[in-house]
Image 1: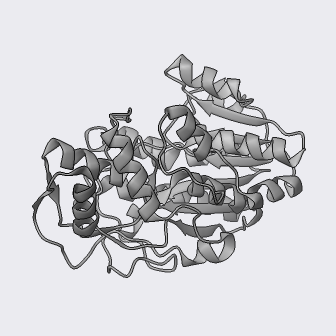
Image 2: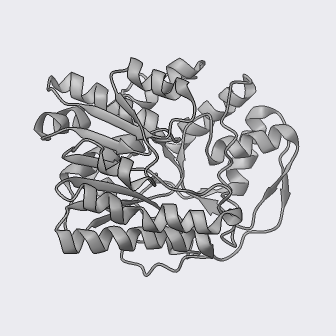
Length: 344
């Protein structure tokens, strides 16, 4: 992000402007990129700011390109908000294969669809959404470049040095298994249909309405105990995640390029919560103890390709504390970062 970052982010409008601010590298890439961009599952947590960044970067690059957002858009305001920023919206249930087949063609596809929260109560739907749906999507967009979102959860629990892309996935629980299934489906169609792809294993994108540091701050304020069993975590400012996602469009390959996307720092739950408690003027409550394994990613490969994140953990922590202290709005979607048994 630009050098004159604000000391605090005071409104949702200011937050969304920062989340969708493209880096110079993204604007430059948009000048070279050919074709329209379609985001499948654009109504979730990441989709809106990612779509806005793609549109802003396209306009700054001075090129003509459609940016299309596809989602069920259960709330009309989500469609209206994207449309007001120049993103063309299409209401579509991607699991309706007839509706999927009628979507417009686009040379660049960003696949964000998936089911996590409540997945332990909806196992069959979780597998259908996470593992079956990539097949019809790949057949529909077999002439496109595809960025497919995955999760660091596919690694399972590993050393606190962080998992590398070459490590063998050992997912814990059906949600993570279904996400590995999603990756394997994309890999299969990438190989058989020669579709250039990148698979992004994301470790905790974070803004100020949701994310691990927001979860921690809210627990401290509420006096709820913070579970230490997971020990450590990674985060990345969602604006940096958005930029890296778009930059990955120039690095797609068949079979797919796999990338861990997260921040540079390995963060201790205990240390971060203690610091946040100091800033909030309230002592955090802890339970449990740090285990020998955790769910961490090493994003050195992505940082080599795209540069290190523009916003570091310290900045993000300060922003989050200030946001929570102000009583600003949040999305009621806890990350469940402390879960070790794979049940979300």
